[in-house]
Image (cartoon, rainbow, N blue to C red; front, side, top):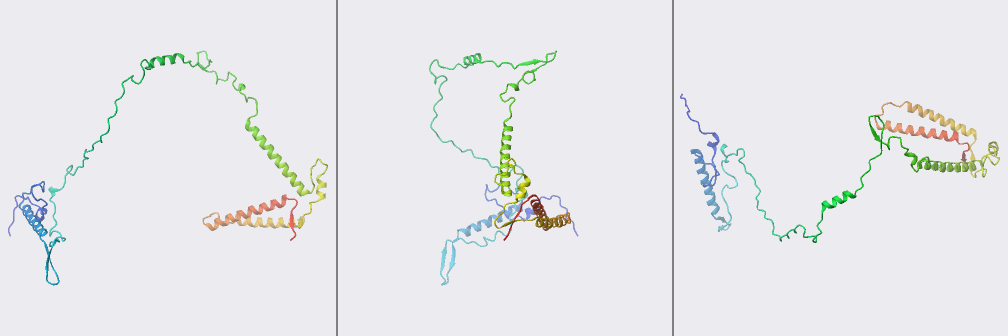
Length: 312
């Protein structure tokens, strides 16, 4: 068995497997390969490229069914669509390094369109007549002389050391008694009183209408000499097709409403404290609505002295 001692190692696997080089001529590449394997690969690639170019220039021959041979301009080449036998790989030195890529730069080829020349600016003072040039310094001086200076506000000294403050807001000068609305009722109070008077008048008119409807006395007033006992003895007016609810029927209805109120209150209080689904929420809202309706019915029957019931 023998050993091989390598003194100089200057090849790599990538260069050994490279079979194709993109260079073709003096401007094909910016680097030059000196390794014999690379030069061999370049020669091989050049031969393949030349053979393909020759095939492109040839005319294709088509054999028809009757044996006639026809030359066509269709370009056909052998194994052109299959690619190269070995995929060409660039060597490590062919990859881009930092700041060596393509740098785009905007071309400064913009040219402004030609336009008609602008007229020159007029000379200073040419727009005014002779002797009419504005003298701003003189005008400002005259305006400053005609300006009325602002008088200082009235002040008062209230300490021996000379501390002063404005007199108008110190409380020493009567200000509010000089106003036009001093000592008068404010406007918003007048509006409120007027609104209350209108509401009281509407309420009095409605009460009068209810008394005439319930008591059956036209123009019912206490000042006319009609007492409450006389009005009660006269009784409610008769309505066609209607009868007045008697006290026994009223008590029976009130008793039934109170029992319903007690039963629904018991159901409402026995509900679960945790309302965690839709069914419980709907049942709670329905019970609350029924309780309010029963309470309103009880209040209506207790506070209404005369209730008419249909006879049909």
